[in-house]
Length: 225
Length: 225
Image 1 (spheres, rainbow over the protein chains, first blue to last red):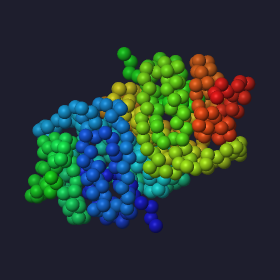
Image 2: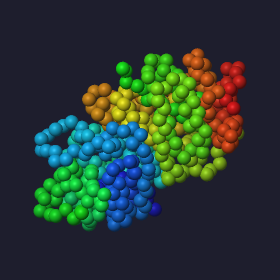
Image 3: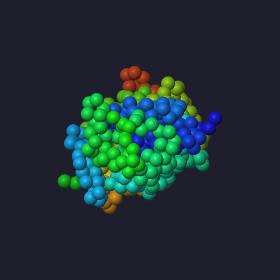
Image 4: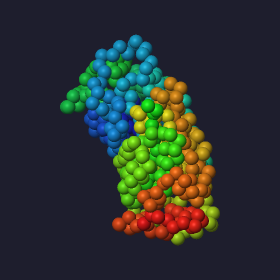
């Protein structure tokens, strides 16, 4: 049997699309999620639903306590920014940035890949919509892949892991269109940085704004609550 | 005030020496340890003692559950190898290897460095004694440093973090000699992979053998219990 692919799964729209792409490429897939003190833990239930709906063979959730380090709106008690003008072209790093988050997530994926002899890690990073995050850029992922090739048994034995970021150069509407072609039910996904206690999206944080605009561009209603 | 250095602290002999070296270089130091399901959790108490004795300004411990992934003797219920012939020059990766461990540890250190605006991470890896671990080699650390420079705010703003591995090319006796010069109390450190419930070293695992041989070469008694 072919080695599985590891797919980082947040419960959001992007990573659901990535799982569909990895499945479409013929991979048996293990979904990997993180409980890292995020305020939007409703994402984790969404990740499990998405994994099931798209036929992942397993879904693992790793707990960790980034809150020890403080600092970000996603993990600390800082107000999530609302109604920001996303067209204003601010190129500063947004406050919702979690320090070194993708590096930590990819490191766990690398550990799991090594244990399961996987050669493929999929991540839903995207350079177009999230240019403010340093660890969402192609040159970052290339450097991670090179490091990973030197870090592991598989790497030094000549079968290094590959980091796949199939959404890297797609716009949000292009991502949704691709996912719809592959049968993704976006009603299962959650993207809001600051949902209410029932899990309902705020519709005003950056993530909600990007998502709503993208569905609008495609002339569709967002099926998520 | 100068930004602090982050020092990975296992409670063992090597990382205690590294903390002494970082302190001697003039750094204010934050010790960073990990509770990762290791059977030798007595190390964590040792790490706290070492941090205090060598004047670290803080000591943080991050909990994580690598056991979800299974696989290694240090985290799973597999027998730790005893009385191995370390001179036999086996170059296979030892069973006590934890998958992607240094990558995960360094990733957390990178997150903490970013939050505390630190530019320096110290790690006690050593190419001489641990050549079986792929993530203890200079080329691995160089690749991690390059990736880190692309991953973070500080990196893209021109102040990337530096990974320091001051023990890389020292033998175990050289490490101990350097630590003794800097006032390290090795009686506080723990190295055994398989201590008994009271914390007493087995004296037969690879780590105990290397440590005992090193003190013997220096004509000294190992002060640890």
